[in-house]
Amino acid sequence: MRTLIRGAICVLPDSTKQVDVLLEDGRILGVGVPAGAKDDEVVDATGMHLLPGVIDDQVHFREPGLTHKEDLRTGSRACAKGGVTTFLEMPNTKPTTTTVERLHEKLALAAGKCVVNFGFYVGATPDNVEELRKAKRTPGIKIFIGSSTGSLLVDGQEALERIFAETTLPICAHCEDEATVRANSERLGGGQEYADHSKIRDHAAAVIATKRAMDLAHRHKHRFHVLHVSTAEEAELVADHRGLITAEACPHHLLFDRSDYARLGSFVQMNPSVKDEADREALWQALREKRIQVVATDHAPHTLEEKQQPYPQSPSGLPAVENSLALMLNAVHQGRVSLEDVVHWMCEAPARVWDIVGKGRIEEGYDADLVLVDLAKTAVVRNEEQVAKCGWSPWDGVELTGWPVRTWVLGQTVFADGKIDDSVRGQEVAFEHERGGYWA
Ligand code: DOR
Image (cartoon, rainbow, N blue to C red; front, side):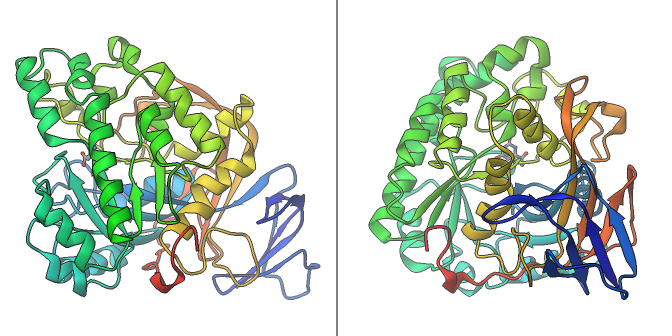
């Protein structure tokens, strides 16, 4: 099957220009090639922008074990609608993805049901270094240095030292200091209202844990990715990357702060917590200066019923994969950031951080994972239109300008005209860790 995408303004690795793109057999066959007699399909994309498909390097799709919240099929459908062509999923499922066997089981499960491409982290426990050493088909190791949803936690110094010293896969971590969180929680009687979440999981908790993890990475010369940076201080800290450290910010930490609890309650309860307006602004600035390189969602759905419980029973996390690109394109519309920045943070940088083969760029030979966006389209996020299983969004009622209108996964149209093609299947992502990551 040969497809010509004609007339779109394409965000290419070193320029943005109107150029035709030819796809064949799941790959980009040519950029700027003339139309040929053999084209099976011509897509007129005049007036639209063509971007590499988004790679979301932090999602929780809840399968196996927690599929009342989300599953691999529904999560991947939400990706397709949102212009996300590849997701990397976290190990806090039930059971946890903490052995090679479970990693392979998850990969097999995904192959049969995901409409976009997929990869899975292997989770660290205090005593599974052998499994972490054996794991291959994975972007890397996830450590919860500080507990969140689920039971995964590695807090002891000895266990952390072993993981950084004895493994070679890239490591990423959820950084919130467990002792600080516990002490804050005790002081506040466990918390009485949603806004207490930001007092319990406070600035210090995030900063202490990020410093601790960065120290481990530097001493062991181990590649490390700081997930969901939420404070201005961490945004400064990660500037000292020494060629080893990369960092990520999430739309919710960029767009919400603690003043939003009054309006949104537990819909803005997540880990790490939302912080202050100054932190939000510092995260945008760190992204612009590429001290933080990646934007990902930490898509972490819970049912409405679960979310509507009082604090602290209400679980932490929110769904975002189907709106993340639109949220960032809206920031382009507002003049806060450039389209090229968004493509760097959401497409190219995650591909480089995780050594993903053949993705993240519109370039000859790369996979035909693409998203066509209409920067002029204005639409309102509506709970009832969400395809993620939980059926709600903290952005319900928010008008955004700039939306994905068509998504290709390996050359197949998986989303167009508002519809998802459920017959499309994504593939397991290939990682070549010898490449050495973002700074190589
Ligand atoms: O708020 C969060 N929810 N943060 C995490 O790190 C985990 C996630 C979840 O799995 O629910």
